[in-house]
Every structure is written in structure tokens, then in C-alpha cells.
Image 1 (cartoon, rainbow, N blue to C red):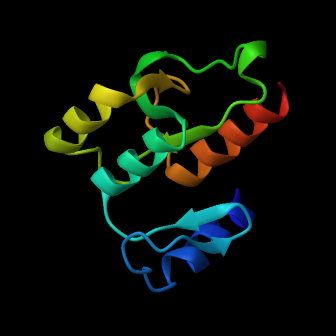
Image 2 (image 1 turned 180 degrees about the vertical axis):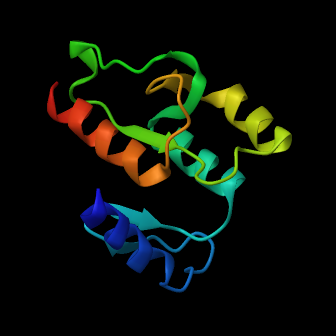
Length: 119
């Protein structure tokens, strides 16, 4: 977890690229500027399965048929999503849970990576 947290911390210190400019800012982590709407739009156009992590949703599982799919995860950290953000996300995402306890984002990332490795 500490390694992932350090990696995310370094990424957050990088300048945000111009909207629409795809820039790899870490191994397997891309940023194209813009906000939530921009990311949703790009991922939908790329055929990414959108998943929003929410403690109140059903458990996250990866069916075997999803093994080759593209996944994109939305998660908040120290503050929950705003009502506006939740509305945007619930319209396009599957709401999934890693448990009913609120966890920090870096812990969620580690758990999701573990679950993906089990496919």
C-alpha cells in the first residue's frame, strides 16, 4: 500500500496536461486533462467498462468473460463524491463495493489490483 500511495502521490504532483492530450504520467496511468465529464466521455468512446467504488453497492467481482476487458475505476478518497458527481457516475457506471467500510483510495487500488490478478 505504501508503494502505491507513493506512486499516486508523485503522479498528483505532475502538471495536468491540456484537455484531449493523452499523456502517460506513470506506468499504465494516463491523463488527458479535463475533469470527470471528459474522462467519462473518453472511456465510453474507448469501450471501457466503468466501475464506481461505493461502500453501499454490491460486491465487486470479475466474471471470467471479463478477463480481456478494459476497466476504468472511479473512487473518491477522503471525501465522498458530491451529489452532482454521484449523479454523473451512476448514469454510466456499475456501482460496486469492496466492503461496507469506508477505505482510503490507495487501499482500494491495492485490493482492486489483487482482484484483477485473480482472474
